[in-house]
Length: 245
Picture 1 (cartoon, one colour):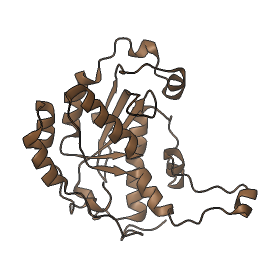
Picture 2 (cartoon, rainbow, N blue to C red; picture 1 turned 45 degrees about the vertical axis):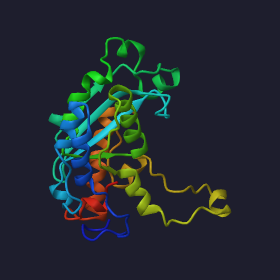
Picture 3 (cartoon, rainbow, N blue to C red; picture 1 turned 135 degrees about the vertical axis):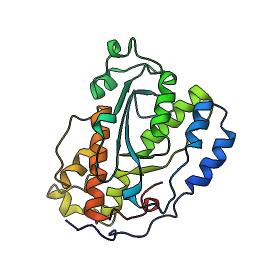
Picture 4 (cartoon, rainbow, N blue to C red; picture 1 turned 90 degrees about the horizontal axis):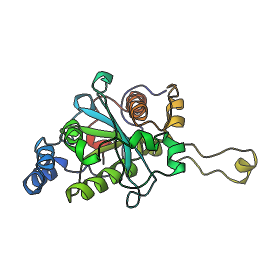
């Protein structure tokens, strides 16, 4: 494994100016919960990772299309490069707007009886946004978490939700992007492209397997994966703007 130091790949898109964006959004947000979220601000792109407050986030949903499906559970785990704060973790089961399907129940094991008395997402939005405020979110596949949260806030509050994200799946994709695609001989021998799924990515760093598709354990797994990625391929002094989107 590579020792901490300069990233193996140093060509990234220019980091988003989240500080200025949050300043503008704090002035235009109509809902007080969103306004308070943006008023907490965002860290500067040149902040070293070791100084960045992070929150790992995972959502479980009734399907994969944020326009037709909805969130059924959320897990948040605050951490930094040195410590994971499990005692401050948060987990909610919420009543989805769309119906549970047999496929989704099989996937995340949240049943109709589990959501019967669960709150609507709008009920816990204030607590959720407070936990996210001032932090950089860490997810494994940002399209899912960012898309579903934005869509949920649009449905409940009539406004969009913007926040910076470090995507551990994208970091793995960067590392393996130059790997040649398997040819006919590779396929004949059963060799497959490198998987960047959460569990497979963790195994490459010697991290243990956890129960999959539970929002809280997947958030913990994502936090541990980022720590391993930074220790192996980057440095604690790497600016956060090199990793986020």
